Amino acid sequence: MFCFQCQETAKNTGCTVRGVCGKPEETANLQDLLIFTLKGISVYGEKLKELGTADRTNDDFVAQSLFATITNANWDDSRFTAMIQEGFKRRDQAKATFLAAYKGKKGHDFDETLPEAATWVATDTSDYAEKAKSVGVLATDNEDVRSLRELLIIGLKGVAAYADHASILGFQKDDINDFIMEALASTTKDLTVDEMVALVMKAGETAVSTMALLDEANTTAYGNPEITEVNIGVGKKPGILITGHDLKDMEELLKQTEGTGVDVYTHGEMLPANYYPAFKKYDNFVGNYGGSWWHQNKEFESFNGPILLTTNCLVPLKKNNTYLDRLFTTGVVGYEGAVHIADRSADGAKDFSTLIEKAKSCPPPIEIETGTIVGGFAHNQVLALADKVVDAVKSGAIKRFVVMAGCDGRQKSRSYFTDVAENLPKDTVILTAGCAKYRYNKLALGDIGGIPRVLDAGQCNDSYSLAVIALKLKEVFGLEDINDLPISYDIAWYEQKAVAVLLALLFLGVKGIRLGPTLPAFLSPNIVKVLVEKFDIKPTGTVEEDIAAMMAGK
Ligand code: SF4
Ligand code: SF4
Image (cartoon, rainbow, N blue to C red; front, side, top):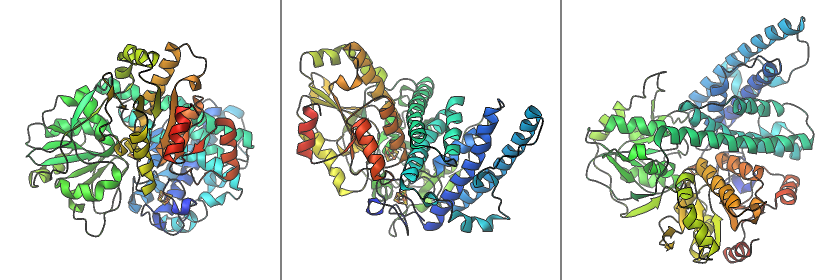
């Protein structure tokens, strides 16, 4: 196996025996083979589009399959095997559709050579393991070509995850799905460095439009997030803990638990569900339990009730964990031994009755903290406060905004982000989104004239809100360049959605981003050089030096 898609990859070069995340070699190889089938589907998908007969039947499958390969999403090899089987079937169907359409249009058979991803055929599933060994990341010899192809695929995984959430709420855009196929197909071609860099930038542009689409989907369905004090203590009734990013699952779970005597709590990236008006009306929605994803082995244990994983991040249970019989997965998430809640039918809802029955037999959660945290500062809410914010900037009460969005993770070096938050001058405001916030959202950092010093926009996809806020400020202050705003970017990354967010920021022209705790292993030295020259990207340094540099606008 070779996997270097996340920040915790072994020695910051690549996991080769077993993932630091716990991913076994077999799973890593199956994921590589699934990506290979997606490339095959995309070769035909792109060609059909070129013929003017775009086939939309594979859009959701491709997005969901990419999503399933994200770090800490799906651990179930049987699910990957089934997806690969389905992928090959879909590829062969796409091939037949293309060949017929080609002949119909051109009057003769298609006779060009196609890449192996479009033509390789397995006799049965027993061929998968062997084939998987030769189609992974290292199949591309040239280090820089590999780096650009993988940067593109890794960013696409984030885009696909956001596109899938939007699609679940009925929002789709053909341009997004077309680009996903164009980009996957591009990795089977010999392109110039300039062509590959252009595709990476287009991935950034697509990440912006996908986050915008998801924002539209979420706010249309559930209203605009509002400033909210979220309870972090517990009630006396049994509860269900829901985590991940899927707000439709959240909605259906709240509806089905109402009046059952079972409470609902969020964990990790589901915390922002507390900010939506549509969810606040449920009396049994108690608040948030615990911290970011990597605390789950401890916090799922003390929660006592069933846990629903709607998306990543699910980490393997430790030997002493006892909650496997309380663990439920749904959507793209999978874990051997956990009950998987089936997808909803076209006009129905998912059936969470097993979880609810399970909860009734469980004791209430053990309290691990008390009090409240404040969030809900997505673009609509911040823009409603725009006059106050602009006045505070003009009067000098706010000197600088520091965007500290992104992911949390296990590494000790991530205390850097807590230390930066604690040591930033008191006239700075932190703009955050994603689970990076857990590094500082429970600190008493105070406010500036009523504006809290930590403004949490929501999930990692709500980084879109931070871009909207920046663009609005640029307009209000009459600036030509987004980089002239008093905003610094100190981004924490862990997995592939954060890479999509990073590409989105680069596409928007943001320069001088600090990225930590380490630069991605999938960037070769030459590609790092390109990013430094073009965008002035830099690794995070020491807390003191970085704060001083950010306050000096560097
Ligand atoms: S997801 Fe990260 S930790 Fe897991 S195998 Fe890949 S690089 Fe390693
Ligand atoms: S911010 Fe990133 S690491 Fe954190 S839960 Fe969301 S996707 Fe996972």
